[in-house]
Length: 78
Image 1 (cartoon, helix red, strand yellow):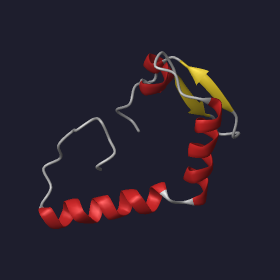
Image 2 (cartoon, rainbow, N blue to C red):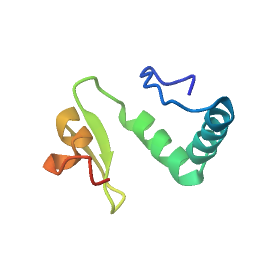
Image 3 (cartoon, rainbow, N blue to C red):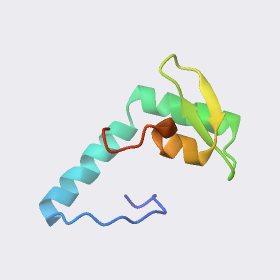
């Protein structure tokens, strides 16, 4: 979690935190995640919007509020 600018603390034991970091890194290195990251870098991120990958694989630029709020559905059920 060194690269994240947001530091939300979870109350995890040292062993659990280490396993979480390993899982996060393993997930970030999957071919699908690498392809999405490369695509985002090609498109270019802006500070006023997010790039949202749809289920069909298309990328759309959307407001931060919509993307982080699950497009009005909220995030409690995720």
